[in-house]
Amino acid sequence: ASRFGVVQQGPPIEVFALNKAFLDDTFENKVNLGVGAYRTEEGKPWVLPVVRQVERDMAANETLNHEYLPVLGLDSFSAAATKMLLGSNVAIDEGRAFGIQTLSGTGALRVGAEFLARQLGYKTFYFSQPTWENHRLLFLNAGFNDPREYRYWDQNKRGLDFDGMIADLKNAPENSVIILHACAHNPTGSDPTQEQWKEIANVMKEKKLFPFLDCAYQGFASGDLEKDAWASRFFVEQGFELFVAQSFAKNFGLYNERVGNLTVVMSSKEAIAPVKSQLTLLVRGMYSNPPNHGGRIVSTVLNDPKLFEEWKTCIKTMADRILLMRDSLRNKLLELKTPGTWDHITQQIGMFSYTGLTTKQVEHLVNVYHIYLLKSGRINMCGLTTKNVEYVAKAIHDAVTK
Ligand code: PMP
Image (cartoon, rainbow, N blue to C red; front, side):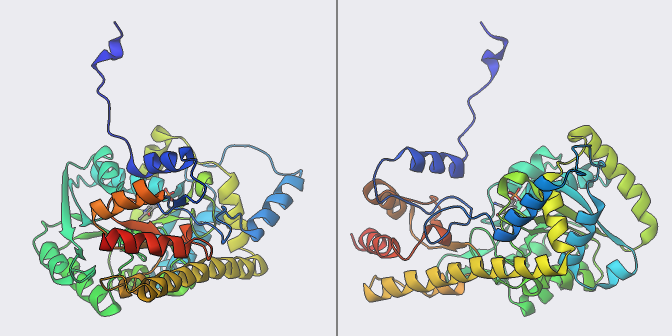
């Protein structure tokens, strides 16, 4: 008998299992609305032209090598990433903000959470109901042991349950870590308004809660880097000490290169050296140092005005295609007179729409139409194309009316 016989089978991870089921499906008109990645109008992954160009230059550059990066990554990358997030900001001017390169957004969340658990002894964290399915597991694995939810989604309104959210934050114990989606909330696509963010910040300040912003979609959400950074910048201007996890998976299309940044903002610059030293030990004992390839690409683009402009047109292309698909899906459902309201499809932002479809309706779409989506009814708008949107709309109509 194996010593591993004691190990229990764990549950599958829904989004990966769904993707596999899609790939194994031989039906010609199958549609993948599950996976969290950009797809072109042809349904294909997209390597941004500006990324291809930088990669070609890197391949031809014989002075580059494969030496280790420092434990906290490439400085030129993390400084540019921090600046892209915070803009020209008082915390940067006063030298009390810095970034470290991490293994994409997940790695930034993990390093940040583990730091808070080990160094500050924080144990309680709050995530939105619903949220990205990895927040809970990630914080528990990082050493937190008191997971709690704050209300976020109102199924009847198909929008934010703002009063519920505020009430739950008001009840949170001091020093709870509150995970906030900086823009384009996953999975609901519904963000607080600026007025609502102000109220959230007031409550968090009063209750001494720690904001950990998760910024996985800057630029990708609205097509505008500044707009998508509004909430993060606002919290910094309000004087919070905070962490922000940045991912370059979506906005650079660098999913598997694992490029991320943990931005740290503190109220005094004296704390920087000790905090950096502890982050260094944490990363050293976890994965020693990050990979270079993706970080160098992002650094090259963010630090070169011409490449930066080119990249901005790429994110605009992606954001615009998503907006177009939101419009088309809503219009088709209106044409079909599908019962219910569908305005939320165009009101929600980012890659995802929380359709409000029930688990049974979702099963119908998967089993009868080979349209793959999460049980929660979340769809990735990029899975839609001008060629399949009608098929999807008719299938939704059938699922809703049958
Ligand atoms: N947070 C949210 C809300 C996300 O949607 C994602 C991507 N699915 C991430 C973090 C992190 O992804 P990655 O580690 O690939 O950057």
